[in-house]
Amino acid sequence: MANVRINDSVLALSERAALAWLVRRVPPAVTPDHLTSLGLAGALFTASGFICCWWSNWFLLAVVFGLFLNWIGDSLDGTLARYRKIERAHYGYFIDHSADLIAQTLIVVGLGFSPFFTIPSALLVLSLYLLMSSYTYLRVVTESVHRLSYGGMGATEFRILVASWALFAAWVGPAIATGRIFSFLGLDVVIGVLSACTFFGFVWIVRNDLTRLQREERIALRKKARAAERAGRQDALFELPTTDLAEQIAQ
Image 1 (cartoon, rainbow, N blue to C red):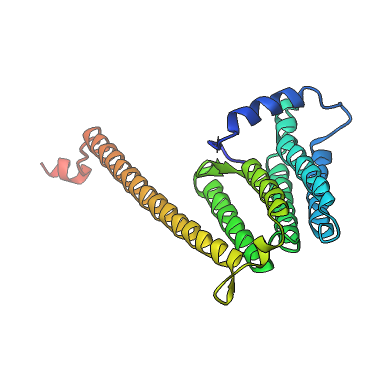
Image 2 (image 1 turned 180 degrees about the horizontal axis):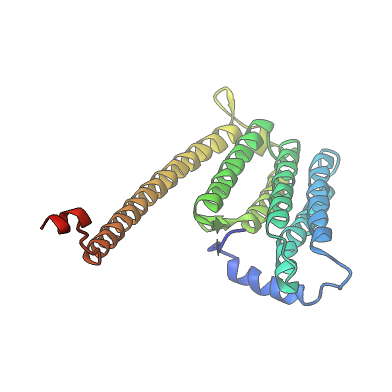
């Protein structure tokens, strides 16, 4: 769908190499749609594992495994379609990003229902993720540019961050999600501050992109006006003078 894909995340090069190795080993019977379904199943597995952590931290193994399945499905479906040259531009774009939105919602909400996070913090994180996703899709429509990462963080780094946080929180214990700063949960305060910083960073990105787009459109309009002016001069140059026949007879 997009003419240009930009991924400058921290793990982009390593991930690209891993996907290139994996895609050559995918069985012929497996299709990109199968992998998309695998990614969704991994997200559901992750959310279930998070909730089950109320009974035992051993369910973190299910969380990590689910995130791995989600990465395989989400990252490899489009790669496989391009490798086999069976891309379906509109269908593929629609199903891929619809699945992404559902999967990330499951993962983040599942984290919020776990002992390692809170629902308010999870909803803040999810709202920021959806905000950045919406902006990404806007750029695809307006500029045919698909940016897969911001500030060095893409979907893969996000999954690693989620898994690392859960393991760290399990190691620290329940106090990490229940400690208070005055009358507020400390975790909500920290996530709220980080979310506010991220939101202002997003506004700064939007402002810079709007300025750039306005400048580019003004330049394009100037070039178009000059081209029209030059075309008008050429038409005038080759225009032959005409004299009325009656006027010639009168002369």
